[in-house]
Structures are given as structure tokens and as C-alpha cells.
Image 1 (cartoon, rainbow, N blue to C red):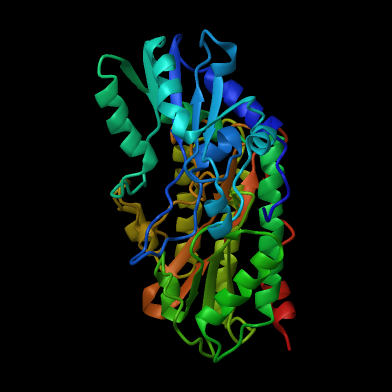
Image 2: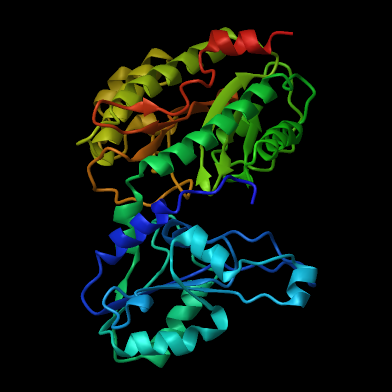
Amino acid sequence: MRYAPIDRELFIRNRAAFSGSLKPRSVAVFNAGDVAPKSADGVRRFIQQTDMIYLSGIDQEESILVLCPDAAEKKHREVLFIRETSEKIATWEGPKYTQEEARRISGIRTIYWTSQFEGVFRGLALESDCIYLNTNEHPRADVTVETRDGRFLKWCKAAYPLHRYERSAPILHRLRAVKSPIETELIQRACDITEKAFRRVLGAIRPGVWEFEVEAEICHEFLKNRARWPAYEPIIASGPNACILHYVKNDRQMADGDLVLMDFGAEYAHYAADLTRTVPVNGRFSPRQRAVYDAVLRVQRAAIQMLRPGNSLKTYHKAVGAIMERELIHLGLLDPEEVKRQDEHAPLYRTYFMHGTSHHLGLDVHDYGIASRAFEPGMVFTCEPGIYIREEGIGVRIENDVLITDTGPVDLMANIPIEAEEIEFLMAP
């Protein structure tokens, strides 16, 4: 694998926490991600389902994890099923996990081949009253494409119609929101790789360069530093494209006088970084660009200080919105008298700052978490205010990743250049 081995104690502790949250006489099942087809005989690169990583560390297709804390046979309280290899598979696809390798990575003692699943699972299901199934319950999830977990849900309910069924997702949303020190170290490694990519691209940006050329520099640095790939599709948005929040075409030639908004992050050992920086294509901010940039930076710095235990996303976003409102008035974008008369449920600042300030970060870029839950030590959030002025062709977003601790927020991207003066200095010929 590209990344260094992860301490299996992470997966052992995660399974113990999950199993301790189950109702008595329950069994829970987790399936690997799919190998997604293209056309003809093509397939896309395999991406493991993140709950499988969280609970086992196993990064291979056709794997199944079963947790049954009250199983009569102790060896069946944690069972991992992996794809059995063959000489043909080894020749065409390369080696797969041996049972001993899977045992070493996951810390699970009982390893079977996937072909043995139905027989073993039947015994566990018949001694259980409740079956926990895994579904994607992220509020922004697109569940149009059926997953292996989705197909298993249909099969399981048909095969065992009289069992009680429960959802694994609420437990995982509670557990995964708080990162262990091992997870925090992996996120920090992803942030450090992202820093290297940002410093690299500052030397490549200039009028006439294409957005995709900047993307290529980023991906080069990621792969060179053992990241498997970007944690999400990089956004390289120059000029008016910076006002398109999820712009990913990256096919415009950058011009003198443009800003370029770059939103990208490395994925290291399945953990994501999420950075945004906005820089002048010619290496110098215009007075107006600088004014907008500094306003966003002030909002971000104030917002980071609010990422503390006991706060919540609702109160946090409202407070950040009030700060942004003042900055927009100062920039001449909002009229203070109109602001006084605004509908509190449709604040005017959203004309220029229409997205949230923060989201959970971890195995997924928009990671698991419960919106109403108070902030706790160990949670990792992005902090990404922005101002988008379509009529001026100016879009500025600045984003860092922040760990919440008992003693205050810890900026995991504190070493990445952010001050306008430093960016201009690093971009100077």
C-alpha cells in the first residue's frame, strides 16, 4: 500500500465502541464498497466504504465484517470475510490479502473467505433477535446508485423477515465525529501533504496557465508524497468561475488580473484534508481584491476561535453570519438600513456568502456528525468563510482544518501560507 500501516489498535477500539452500543442479542453487518463499472469491460479505481475502514482497516473489495457481541461461540463475535484469491486472480489483478495479513491489519482473529459468509451468518442470525444494517444517512448523500450494503439489505430482509432491524448509521455518526489521536495524526499527515502541494502551485500560477495545469501540479505532489489521490475533485476556479461553489471543470485559461480560488486536499490513509486558498494570478492583489481577501480572513480568524467545546453548529453559524454581515457592509456590498429591516430567516449576507462555514472532516470530506450535537474535544471541522461577488468577478474563500481541544482550537493548517503579503512574496518572480 502507498501509506504507512495504521496501528490496528484504532480498529480494535472502534469495533469495541460500536459493539458496546448495540442492543443485546444483535448482529451487525458491513459490506465493502463496489468496484464501479465504466463501459465495455472497464472499471473505476476501487474506493473502500469508509465504515469498513473505520472498523477494520481492510482496503479490499468483496470484504464483509460481522459483529455479534453475544455470539455463543467467542470466535464469532468478530468475523471478517475476505475474497479468496487464486492463481488466475494473482496473475491478472495481483495479490489479495491472505487470512494472516487481514488478521494483522484488522486485529480480528476469525477470518473466513467471502464464499463462506451465508453459512456462518445464518448461525449468527438465528441466535440473534436484531440485525443492524448499514445505510448512507448523510444529509447530503446521493443514494441513487445502489451499494453492496443496499443490496445486502434487500437480501437480508427477504431471508430473515421476522427479525427486528436497526440502523448502524446513528451509532457511527456519534462515534466517528470524535477522532482519536491516531486519526488526528493521519489527518495532520494529509494536511502536511496538502501544504506541499499549495507551496508547489504558487510557483506555477501566472497569466496564460490553464486551470487544469494547476490541478496537475497538485496531483503530482499528492502522489509523490504517498497520498492515494485527492480527497475530492479539486476546484481550480479562476476569474468568474470562483463564484461557482462546486466548479470542477478546471478548463479555463487564467488571465492577468484574475483571482484563482483553489479548493483541494490530499487523502492519506483514507483520511482527508480540505484546504482553500485564493491567490492573484499575476502575483499581486488589486486594492479591491485585497480588501475582500482581508475581510474573509478576518471572518475566518474569528470563526476559528468559536470552534470550542460546548458551542454548536447552529449558534456558531449564526454568530459567523453576524461577523460576515459587518464585513459586507464595510465593503459597500450591503446597506446597513436594509440590513436592519431584513428577514431574520433570510439574512442579506447570504447574497454573498451562501454556504455554511464548517463541516466535520475525517474519513469523508463531509464526515459523519450530528448537526445538533455540541462541539467536543476530538472533533475536526473545516473553517471556510467566503465572499462571492458575481458582478465583479471576485470570489474569495479561505479554508483551514481545525481540531477542537479542551484548551482551544488547534489549526492543523497553521503552517500553510495565508496572509496576503506572504502569498505575494512567495509568488514573486
